[in-house]
Amino acid sequence: MTEPSLADWLARLEALHPREIELGLDRVASVAARLHLLAPSAPVITVAGTNGKGSVVGALEALLTHKGLCVGVYTSPHLLCFNERIRIGSRNVDDTDIIAAFEAIDAARGDVSLTYFEFATLAGLFLFKRRAVDVVVLEVGLGGRLDAVNIIDPSVAVITSIALDHQDWLGDSLDAIAREKAGILRPAIPAVIACNAPPAGLTAAVAASGARAHWLGEAFGVESAAGGGAGWLASAGGKQRRLPVIHNPALLAQNLCAALQALECLGMPASDTELLEVLPALQLPGRRQQVTVGGVRVLLDVAHNPAAVARLVEFLETEPCGQKTIAVFSAMADKDIAAMLELVKRHVDGWFLADQPGNARAASAASIAAQLRDVGVGMISVSRNLRQALARARSVAAPGDRLLVFGSFHTVAAALTWLSREQEKA
Image (cartoon, rainbow, N blue to C red; front, top):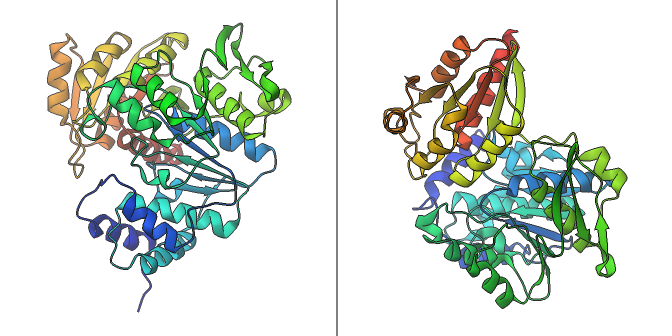
């Protein structure tokens, strides 16, 4: 009898639990306890927030790896393959390791029902323990307080920006969402809060947690500098450390500084030499990622809510195209699509919209087209899928034009697959 493949396992996990998302820690913690996963021997950095988590995690992984440490990283969602969610030593773990972890979790859970995300989280923790990694970096999937990664007590916690998103699960106000994010904090542990204009709910929740808070603009901060971003950190003994100028327009300086402050709090600071060797060249898949195809600059960004699109617009303004910017866009129906379009419309000369067959959450291309017309946009193409939209956009793009792909992880994932095929043809 053929052993189940990773694809078989993932299909099973998708059908195993009656709900795709079920927030709460009791079930997943009980299984983690059976597998002896609740107290990792390695230090743990947990990262929560609405936007910017991926950048913080990516910077932490790159800098810790540069130090010669074996880093275990758990993130979500993935772009192209599930293996991206669990990385050890800067490499995605292979199918065999994930299957072994799933088998161990399945055997340990008994009659406890776990979601797809909970299985994935436990698999990451299982493999990090088995490989005896030096440092663990965990990215919260949704919220914080009731997210599966919160079964682990962090050595350092990071909270990035707070914005409206996932209101059905986290609450319909910034204060409510902030309280959920702050659920990862623990008494007396360092907490790096990289949120501009923090809502009152965050300030209150951080104070109530008893964590040792390092606030953006107080303990650490960023500033503009010629040629890039600079800033300062709170180093050992409470002394202020000035940072060198780091030029990487694809990454927000506040996210980079949050990662650096977390390393200071962990007692593993990155030297100026390490920063200059690692950070200027750091590029994260789907985060302002740029690729050139046939002279056309393709910019991919997973921005999928108004706050993230606002940051994308700032980037577009600092990196002018000089010719046309053509957008390929698709987003989930539960997002504030109208606000996203309003923010970016003046930077786009033509829109190529796509349906996502098989993705029940996606907004229809026709509904997005109607919203664009409502805000006065005329050059619109509607396609039956993302591959068709990308091909059509590419066909009208001339060398020197910019092709902007954004709106969701699904949108960027489809573009990365399409780009791979285009590059193979070249």
